[in-house]
Image 1 (spheres, one colour):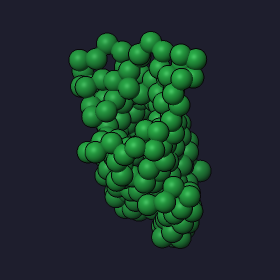
Image 2 (cartoon, rainbow, N blue to C red):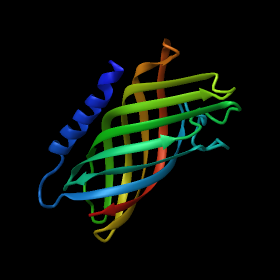
Image 3 (cartoon, one colour):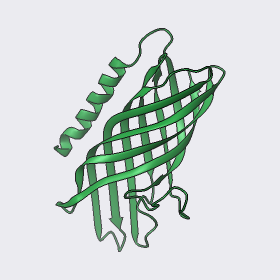
Image 4 (cartoon, rainbow, N blue to C red):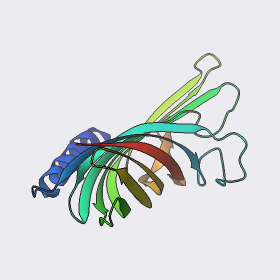
Length: 194
């Protein structure tokens, strides 16, 4: 896919998701700022439990929930994604639009989700800025979690997601064979409903 078309495709997916999101009077909007960490795949931590340097991932999700389905846009940013390496900075930005199956069981809403979006990596070798590369990739995510609302307006949620790119990464114009960006993210969020 051409990099110039990725932002247009992403905007189109978000518009489509907004149109297809539940529109009944019981639909509820939400904003969920989150903090988490990445593990597995290409991240600096190979497992969630046996990693001393858990590099944080911060972001925000927002969307709408109906009686049993919903839609969200999730924006996450990971600093030092590949681990802390002297002379290197590596950041990953993800923007995903997700369809959610999220039934309401009293104040508890377990969910599964899947979606498409953009993964942007930025790697820089700081000797001094000897090598700098950016990659924009079309990708997908899927995951599961639970949201608990305390009343109608505030709650918490936690989830685990797998995030992966469709395309192979490139460095200085060279495509790396069999090198798709791939990782998992665990996160916890405050949920503000409206």
